[in-house]
Image (cartoon, rainbow, N blue to C red; front, side):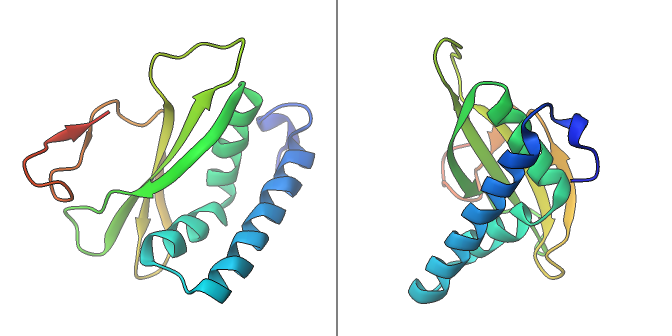
Length: 133
């Protein structure tokens, strides 16, 4: 991380923990065989900006819940959502999320949108459904 103050005190140890978790996930995926979404999620987490957003949520009293791929209208792009739940005493009515747009050919992060739009279009994944919280 280029600027430890960017996400707050204690973030460098959290970055180390996140990187260890990524390495463990990559080892596990290597033995089980990756699916495309998991591979993209791990590629996104290798990006420094994505790591900074991830740690910012942890430092804000949020626990990582899940990551998932939404796909995109653009064939060479995917959208990955990182979702967090609020940990007591913090109260959230909806999960906290950030969205990563990624080029699936180059594995490069195009943009990080934090917070993610509340209504994320998913109709290409769920026929009949237009949006998902």
